[in-house]
Length: 253
Image 1 (cartoon, rainbow, N blue to C red):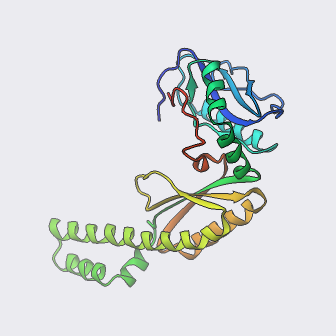
Image 2 (tube, rainbow, N blue to C red):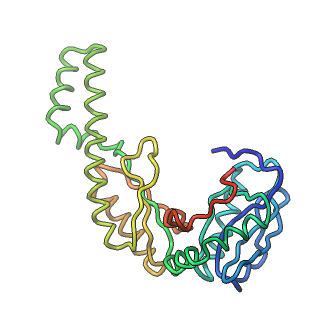
C-alpha cells in the first residue's frame, strides 16, 4: 500500500474525550517522529501532529500509528483514523469536531471497553486428500486424468479442485461467522481480499477478547480440512466508526 506525499497540514490520529492524557513517550509518524499534541473542541479532542513531508506507508510509521491508537485505547474509547488522514490545518479539524460533536460522542460511548478482531477465511490448501475423498467429481476427474493424461484433463481437474476448495471454504466461512457473531457486540464485513472467502471484523468486549480469539482458533481446527482461519487482534475499532461519526477532513492522503 502506498500513500501520496503529504507536504504540509495536520496529521490526525484519533478523536477522543477531553482530558485524556497522552501515553508516556508516545510519538507520531515521520522521521524523526513527529511530536503529538491535542487540539480540542467542547467535550472532544483530536490527537494530531504536523504532517511529515513525503509520508509513505512505511512499516515504522504504520506501527507507530497503530501503537498510539492501542495505547490511547487503554485509557478509554478512541475514534481511530486510518493511516494517512491529513487535514489542511487545525481549524479544519476543530470545525469538524464542532459539526458533529454529539455524533462523535455517541460513537465513543459505543466503543468504550471494546476492541476489534478481524477474521479472514481462506480455502484450505493442505487438505487435498480430504477433498478427493469427499468430492465425487474431483475423484472422477483425477481418475480420468490418470487414465488419459493431457493438458485438457489437467485443466479440468485443476478447475474442479479450485472450485471445490472455494465452495467448501465459503460454506465453512458462513458457519464460522454464525458461530462467532453471538460472542461479539457487532460484526462488519471488510473489503474483498484476494484469496479470501470471508473478511469479517468483530466488535468485542476487551475482557472477552482472549476467549473470542481462542474460539476462532478452535473453529480453525474444526474446519481445517475446509478452510484456513486467520484471526488478528486486538485492533483499533476502525470498522465500527459509523458513516455519521467518521470525520471527513481532507481525506486519507
